[in-house]
Image 1 (cartoon, one colour):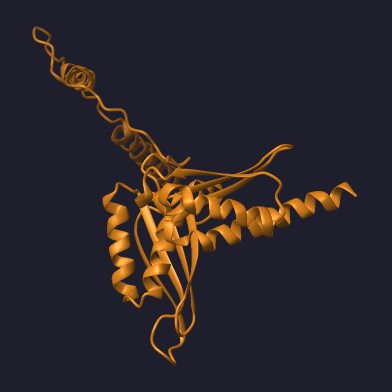
Image 2 (cartoon, rainbow, N blue to C red):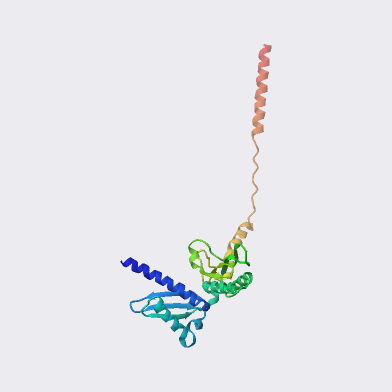
Length: 263
């Protein structure tokens, strides 16, 4: 069936990538692509050290082509070597480099810190290096160590913009996993807010516009010359008069009542 052929092509392509990753590991591979066409099977190797893949007078690349033809039964394989432009900012290259250093017995703290400083000095916005496994000598426990610097995204769709690299270091005592995450200098995340740079003339115009309402408020607060403020007339309260009248009416009633009693 056609489905089985697609699955077979995918599995063979994966096995070719794994094989070439181990064969060309010293050249620090960044990416391997297997492109199938009706006439040719094209294999693109993106490495940091192309000379180690090509070899002297092309001997190494011819040997790899012959091995792929016999081992994987490829009719007409062609290998193309592409150099990495900036290997310091390539996460996969740096992960393999750390794994090789750990296999040679170097101190993991020193290797991680040096790699982090090198990546940030190259202009990266952020970097994170994670190492998992038995980092000590014989009998050490498994643990996870992490070093990071700069700005890093760890969730959501912006994670796709982060360059990720993974490698495995097969040391004498155990297997150690290495993960490297790098945010490139030209990467812009959706939450980034760009502030435009203003010239001196634009800044002066903005200052003038901001100072105009303040001047208008001061003019309104200042009194106008030639016009004197007319004092307000005081109005007397009539409550006292009303109370007096009530008292007089009450006294008159009491007097009238007294006269009636005498009569």
